[in-house]
Length: 469
Image 1 (tube, rainbow, N blue to C red):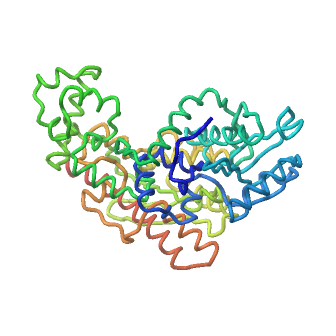
Image 2 (cartoon, rainbow, N blue to C red):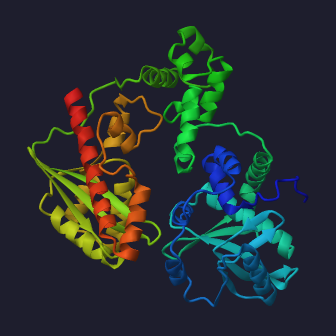
Image 3 (cartoon, rainbow, N blue to C red):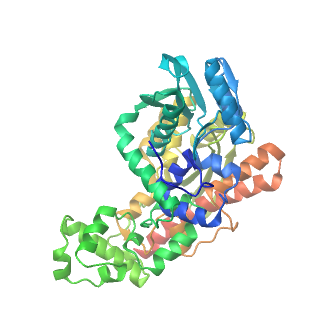
């Protein structure tokens, strides 16, 4: 199958599909810049892989030939040699066909006829997420496409290995049509086509996010509306409403022309557009937080995906007018269990306290740590019945004039300030890396201050809601 004439310096890699699925404009801006401006550790984090030493531990029982060369052409040459020799497991190899460059974590030999002999290779990536994401599947299809060119047979399945060593497979044919459409679109973008931009939370993964958001705001684009679907924007535009301001000001007659969206949903989208246009918060109903006189706990968790460790549980203990921050920290990844046990011991002192958090993440981590290390039945019951997601509670009652409802987006809009100008979950992981690798005390201090600011911001939102009702 031939390929169109591309800028020959523009390689398509498995990371290209990640960028494309997160924000197609990412590819355009990177093409203009001529370089991937992300730091290597950030690339690793966004690729949802693990540190090499952790990955090797997962395949320690296999007969492994490691490539892992900095020069991609040398890596591809060595990989090809190992494939011709019939190596059983190739770790950190490289596959090249024209301008396609694939770097699967594992190539595994299986029996079957190919250009190589009575064997061929399948690809597997090591990913920390327990969910089989679209970018994983597209990357696997990309490896299969290159392997077909190199060995004369395309693997039927792609594979992902989890951080616990389990492996999940998926059929390439089930996603192949969508993969080819994405590949064709990528090739057109690399040849100069301007992609249709639609602002989503995925765009935040791009190093060009601020430029994307500014452009979207300047256009007053409908994708500024929080959690609006592309299909909804399409039918709203088809009715002649092309911006946030136009939707906010639309008459009932204009809204009546919009098809395929229920009346209640369309009215809610108009309220969101009004909030954005006027830059004001709209209260739809009282925010329903418990009015409990007892102690309250506010929780925020920091995790290092590269090491597959949850390294900090920060707690804000609120008792009347007293507010105290306590951190439970695994200063070494090997101390995760001890950290968890110390946290559980603390929780035993407050068996009836409500536990406030922002978003689903803390619930997910608690479930994982309970399964991994155990917990008293009373504490598990507390996790199941006393946890209050501030974000979910807000969504039921408040419309904010924001495209995104992250803790930082909402709290900063309402006036809360983080001490560190670069405060983010991503930087927390980078700081932890500096602490582990270099013993940097300032990095550890930054993590603790960032976590404390997060729990204080969460409680700030709870108090804001109570005062504004």
